[in-house]
Length: 116
Image (cartoon, rainbow, N blue to C red; front, side, top):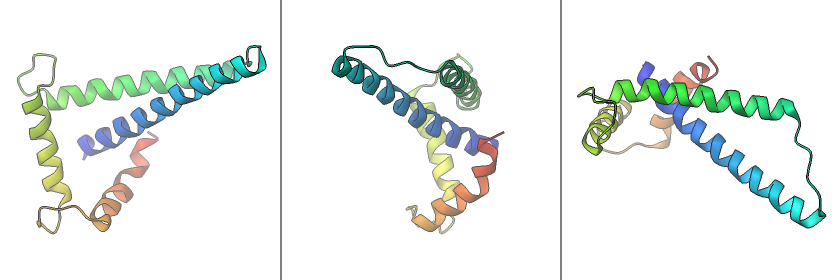
């Protein structure tokens, strides 16, 4: 169960970080358009740094779960084996496909863990 929470957290963190990168591009574009710097509140920067630190910590935990040969890295083979195991666990109908219902049930079970 902890592995799925980590996977969900890492995926969401990546999406958050991708959104943050997009926000900085927008700020750059805004600066060019207005001719001046757009002020960024310190609070948002601190929140962003905390999210990055949390995502980094969760990624390290995920690496430890996936790194079966304990060399500090995840090979493609280790990644694929881990993801195959997770897919099989989520595929409750055992039909080789994940449908919306299976994914929704999985998200409902693990959503509260994301905020912890």
